Length: 153
Image (cartoon, rainbow, N blue to C red; front, side, top):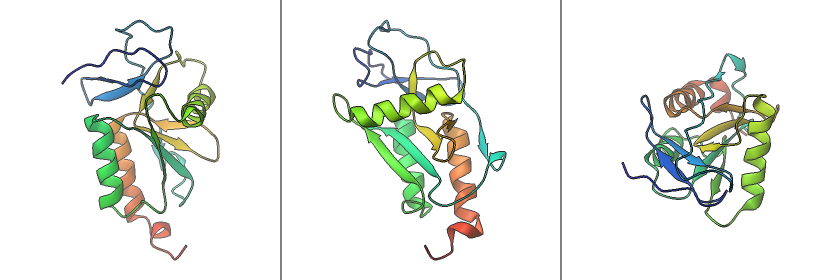
């Protein structure tokens, strides 16, 4: 997998991880080889209720395999109307980047300033639920099977 060096807060970096690739966008002051952010591994059903329209996915606009896989799963599972999506584009959408930064900061004091996507965020608490791709994919599968996601809006 290729690496893109981080030059600004809105230029993404796709970094391989042992369990799953993560896509990162680091602050402007970050060095080109910034270490990957620690994975956040909250789960829907373990502190986060399966409720339609509660969650937002943040995805990168480039060809990051993790973001593409999560976007495809969201569509395949029929969740596009129940889970909001923000696509972060390099050099644009500062509001989206700012919202994701606030979610990381609300998640905990160990945040090192690195924003990684895909990220599943809870709209009620304002926190990142998970930035671990396999967990996000499994949570999307669980949401698609939950009865609340099959009721009329």
